[in-house]
Image (tube, rainbow, N blue to C red; front, top):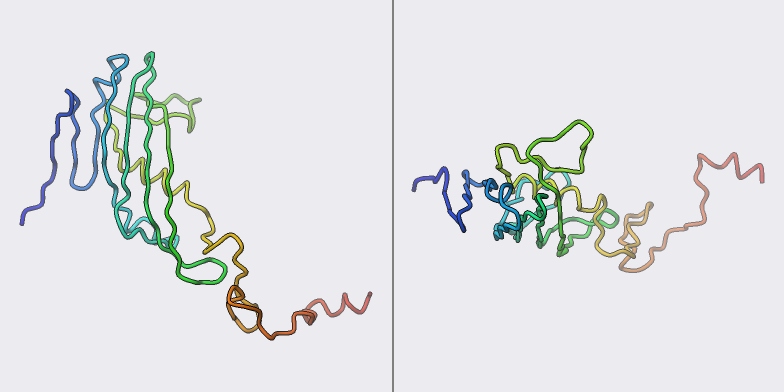
Length: 185
């Protein structure tokens, strides 16, 4: 079995290059022709992307990408949907959740100093869609993954999952580090 290093696809006169597992769009025609539109369906494998966040993506993320030129401004829009698996940050129960996001950016050939994060650079009319999708998705995911919004977590004394019912621990005990303050009352 030989590994394909690249695939060249010509879609309505626009060159799409897939390097290994990364898709690079050649957007020269989009940048130069007003009202030109490119629509592409792709998928991004994020199997290794969520390891630092203890999140797994069991299947590649599917994305519908549209790049269009309106009045000389090039717009990028991506609709993504995916499922992720994680352990709840409060109760440690294994959970899964489906997400759907819509991302939009304005593409420019080069960034100026004052443009900041408002624009995405597409040097030489090329855009690595996989890298952009990966960044957008990881930035949009929540910082805490919960099995449900009303998750009660674990008992700090016995470790019982409080979503399954109350435990028999005495919750009225004062923390020994605060016992001195209790004497003042």
